[in-house]
Length: 416
Image (spheres, rainbow, N blue to C red):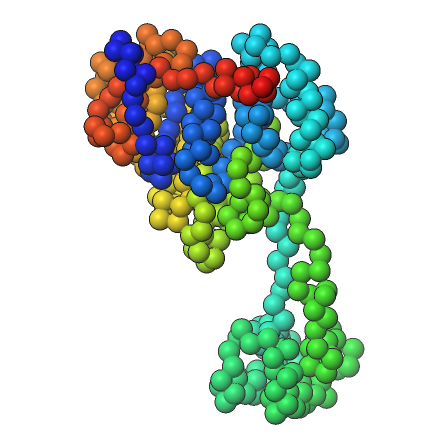
């Protein structure tokens, strides 16, 4: 409702998702409360949406518990309800509305459903493609190394290149495909045998070439080479699950260590954008970054992954809309955020920001008057200055609003 008029403000939640949104305010003003409420509305309005919340403070599992979210974490809870509960922030106002045992039972239910899982920091397993490019690289390294066998390797390399041109192959042609072409297979085997006969039999390169000949003779073991191993549950795995897999709805990623959080967020976004560009736009994926100052600070370093997360988030904000990969950010330290990222937001909520320089950054980034931003210091919990270029009928017209309380909605649904 509009403050002072008791009139509803109609907002297009689909546009808020499509064109990115920011929520800014000091500690305790209700950022996670508002964000959780907006997430509910997005789930209602956008069919099949996947929402991924990166949560460093442990606030969103409780706020959205009635929606039966999935929880991923670098922490290993070992299926222990108490450990999960202790890791999450339980608002005092919510404790007055609902018994703690009700929360515990709901978390236990999530564990029983397999919806609380550990997320690994391990890098993705990348298979080395056994193709003609691999063979060219192998002989190329030997030839460039200027060591024993370099001349023979250069001769073999030239012959392999002529074979590729004549047969219309390229570096991506698999060895298995060459094996099925009898003429090409015989010629390649002759090249390899000639090389082997001209170098020392104890050389390490001999074993590599013999292994290639074994593939030409017997073929690849499909079970071992093409995904027989279960995927590691890491950032790349999660991106695939939410972009093209079955993980629709709310997915919370609890990452208490900011350095780990930045590392995972950068990898997740890179994989998400790659999937969107290569496998089709598909469903809408909304990434929510709580405590965004951890991910897009104005000063960056490679060592703590602030540089990597900055680049990834800015790419998501700049490019994501075309691929239905969208982003919301929440932060209390606006003055230390990447201004280039801020300027990609088309809708934003601003609550109490006691520091003048925080308000000044908001005013400059969104072309608002300083006097208007100063009025936000008088707002109560749940009251916001809202401005949107896309989500309201009156574009870029500031409005002071009072938003519904997510805790009341959640408590009512849990007790129903």
